[in-house]
Amino acid sequence: MGILQTTKGKVYAALFGIVMVLSYWPGSLGPLIGLPYGTYGPVFFGWMPGWFFYQLVMYALFWVLCLLFSIFVLFPGVEEKK
Amino acid sequence: MNVFPIVLWIVVFGAIWFAIYIAAGYFAYKTMKGTVDDYFVAGRNIGTILNTLAWMGAMFSAFMFLGLFGMSYKDGMGAFVQGYIIALMTLFYCIAGIPAWALGKEYGYISPIDLFVDRYESQALRYWLAFVTLCICIPYMSVQIAGAGYLLTGITQGAIPHWVGVTTATILMGLYMIPGGYKSVTWVDAIQGVLLIFVLWFMLLFLYLKAGGDMAQIVEQVKASSPLEKMLTLPGVEQTFTHGLYVFLAILAISWGFFPQLYPRFYAAKNPKAIILMSLIVGAAAPLIFWHAAVGGLITRILVPGLKGLEVDKVLPIALGKYGSPWIIGLFSAGCLAAILSTATSFVMAVAAIVVKDLYQAERRKKSQMEIIRIGRYGVFSFLVLSLLIALKPPSLIVYIVWTTFALGIQLAPLMFSTYYWPRANKYGALAGSVIGVVIVFLHLFLAVYVDPAYINLSLWGMHPGLVAFIPNLIVFVLVTYLTPPPSREIQEKFHGFLKRRFRFVKETVAFKRVPPSPSL
Image 1: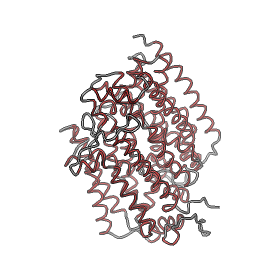
Image 2: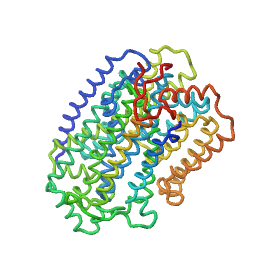
Image 3: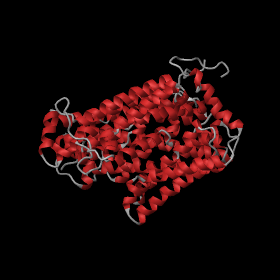
Image 4: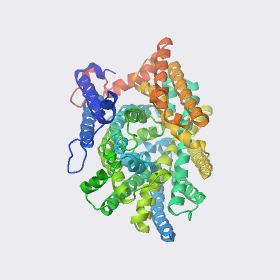
C-alpha cells in the first residue's frame, strides 16, 4: 500500500520494531538469549518492581506511537465523505 | 453458612440490572428503521463512546473476574501481560477495522464472510469459512452461558441450580436481542461494559482496604514468605510467564483484530475516526482495567492464603465471601453476569449474521429486508436455544474445543489481512493456507483428547499449537498464491483500488496533514 515506501512510514515501522523488542525484554527476549527474567531491580513508589514499571513506560510509549501512526501515517484522509 | 441473604441480593441486583438491560434493548428496538443494516450492524451509525463501551463489554468475559484473578493469585504480577498485549491489539484494530468499515459501508457487507467471499471470488470459501467460524463461535458462546450457571451455583452453594442460571441468562438475552438485534446488543453491551469495569475496580478497592490499604506493606508481606517473593518477578511462582507465553500472546493480539465476532463492531461504527478513537481509548484504559491482574493476586494472597487447585480460579468470590457482606457478593455476581452476557451476545449475533446472510440468503436471493430480519430473529432464537442446550450439560470435550478457538482464529489472519493489503492474494492460496492451518489445529485437538491433554497448549519445540499451525499456513498461502493466477483486475480495483483512493494509501498524499477525500468518491 505504499506505507513503507515513505520516510515517515519507515521511521514509524522502525520505532514500532524497537519499542516492541524493548518492551518484550523482561519476560521474553532477554530470557530467550540467556539473560535472567525480570528481577526486582529498583523499586518505584515504594513498592512497584522495576521490570513492571519498565513495562508500563513501554506500554505508554507504544500507545503514543499507535496514536501518532494512526493519525498521521496509516489513515491521513479518514474524514467522512461530504 | 446461611446463603439466603446472598441469594436475596443476587435476585435484587439481578432484577435491577435486567430491567435496565431490557429497557435499553427496548429503546434500541423502538429506534430501528426496519433495515437489514439496522438489525445486523446497528444501522452503521454507532459513535465512538458507545462503540468503545460496547467493545469493552464484548471483549471482557468472566475470565476477568475468575481466571485472570486466579492466574495473578497463583503466579503473581506477570499476569498483567494479558492486559499489556492490548497495546498491540489496538494497532491491529485500526489496521483491520478501518478497511473493513469502508468496504462494508461501500458494498453493504454485514458479516466478515460476506466480504471475504466477494474479495476472493469463491463460493467454496463461503462454506469453509462458515464452518470454521461456527467452530469458533458456538462452543465459546455456550461456555459463556454455562459459566453463568456455574457462577450462580458456586456462589450460592447450590441454592440456585445450574439449569436456573443458564435458562434465566438465555431468556434475558433473547428478550433484548431478538427484537432489537445488534442495536440492542450494542446498547446493552455498553451498559454492561460500564458495570463490569465499575464492579472490578470496586472489588479491588474493597479488598485492598481490607488488606490494610498500604501497597508497600502488602508487597513487604509477600516478599517475606518464600516462594511468594517470586510473585514480584518473572516468570512467576510456577514459571508461567515465560517467553513462550509472551510470544503466543503477542500473536494472539495480532490475530484478535481479525476475529469474526468483532466484524459487526467494525461495520457498525459511524466513521473510521470512531474505530481509531475506540482503539486508542481501549489502549489507554487497558492498564487501568488490567490493574487487578497486577496487584489483585498480591492482595488476595494476604487475605486468603493457601488456596489450591480449582479454588484458585474462585479466589475473588472466596475472598469476598470471607470479608464482604452479602450485598457485595450480589454486586459481584451482577458484574460477572454482565461480563458473561455481553460476550455471549456478540458471538450469537455474529453467528446469526453468518448463517442468515452467508448461508441462507446466499442460496435464496431476492428476499425483502423485512423477511431477512424475520429470518435473522429466528436465527438468533435458534442459536440461543442451541447454546442453552449445550450449556445445560456441556460435554467434557467442550473445554478442549474452547481452548482450540484461539488457535483457530489465528489461522484466518493471513486470509483476512491479505483481503485489504495484498492485491495478489487469491482464493487458491487463501483456501490452501487456511485448510492446512485448521487441519493442524484439529490434529492437536485430537491429540489432546486421545493422547495427552498437554497438546492443547504445547506443541513442537514448546510452541503453542496455534503458532505451529500458523507457520505452514502462511507458507502455503504465499506459495500457492504465487503458483496460481492472480485475482481479476475488477476485483483488485473493487477492493484495493477503492481502499487506495478512499484512504490515500499512496506516497504523495501520506503527509503530516489532513487531506480532503477525493472528489471522485
